[in-house]
Length: 478
Ligand code: FAD
Ligand code: AMP
Image 1 (cartoon, rainbow, N blue to C red):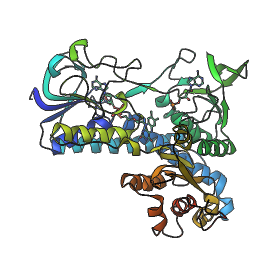
Image 2: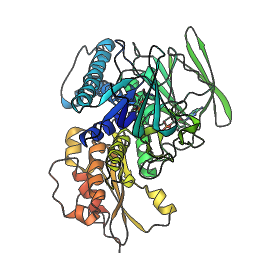
Image 3: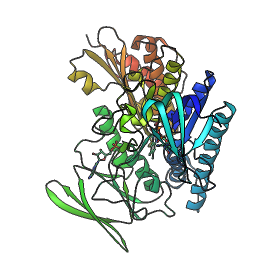
Image 4: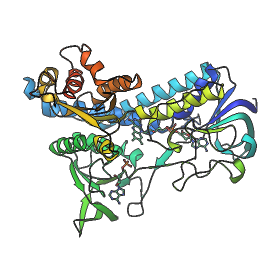
């Protein structure tokens, strides 16, 4: 085994493994170091995303959606279903099979691209020396011309809710309950809290979400967040804003949560409690003081717009650096860094990174929100269009939500798009393409959209920017 590489990548999550594959494709001798091992002692590749994040959560969201459809929504289609029953063990086995298929796929891709996979706990020292501690506590030293840090993130724990893996769990624990909790508490109404809360609510839990902030989804467009809040409440999620959790007590019968709300103290007892109060970068023991790498007060590695750290030849990508903690953001940073190491002037357009909440309906966004733009004093025009006026949405019984497109008042260039509704993630991706190509809303207005599709809501919202929507009473603003 070689000990010097062109590139060493630390961490095999979506940022790290994509970077490693790209480096290898560009002809560089590449190694990826992964600390996690599976039950057979093999490296557990794919990071948070494949093992305990994006993929298993979407597997359960899909299974639970089918269950909710079968139990709640078939009658309206004239279909009667009897004796729908739930087998959680089978549902979890399906989820695990998907995870294994995908992690196995990553392993195959790394192998076929000639990337060397090293198992162990890596620490970056001075001069791009990487010390790797294996299972047997043996330390090996590797060196590289370039080192890419991609160590990812972990759930934040808060003193009032110490995770015990039984009554009180983090997102990882919430992906493997062996039964549907009768009453489920969720701390934090962020993306992860809403997705996991939705899974268990659809499967029959009574779900209460406690959120410390007074505003629901404060980073989303206000109008979209408001609409999403109404839809989730209608679905049965009991979302309590301004409710700060202050303590918890686990007993044989459940977990009692103390929280403050409207200036008074309250308590609730749940069978299970999911703590989903955010994630922190895993940079604690990732590098030594003489590595030249530094972090901010929250532990994020300092990088420039090209993900270069302050240490020559050391890069950092994914959840350990600024920006949204999203798999696709990290992967594209990985590609950019590989190309820059190879000498190309690659860059990433951070303005058009989409973000998605995979509830049903989905909530998705790209670019700036209306409130952000108004705060900046930008001159904008806004078009919205409700799914209720879209034929395909009516046919599918998916009429909740709307598409909102914001454009510059003078140039007509698209500045942001925000969707709550059916296929929101895919509809926003259409706008990502448009924004990347610097399209105007007029470009969208002039395009032909298939009928009947959910995409027609994008077309109509683009038309509505100039008061020209067809299937809604609106007038051009003069
Ligand atoms: P990670 O995926 O965290 O991978 C880092 C890897 O580095 C890990 O395998 C770790 O073991 C390894 N490592 C760490 N330190 C060392 C070390 N010192 N030595 C060796 N190896 C090390 N994002 C989306 O875009 N879409 C979603 O739908 C989505 N859903 C999510 C759902 C949940 C429940 C969660 C928890 C997250 C979700 N995310 C989603 C976020 C997404 O998982 C992360 O943004 C993404 O995994 C970050 O990728 P990464 O490569 O930076 O880090
Ligand atoms: P996110 O970072 O998007 O995953 O969201 C996490 C959410 O948890 C944020 O909206 C926080 O306001 C919320 N949160 C953090 N601490 C508490 C707490 N003690 N009680 C209730 N909500 C909290």
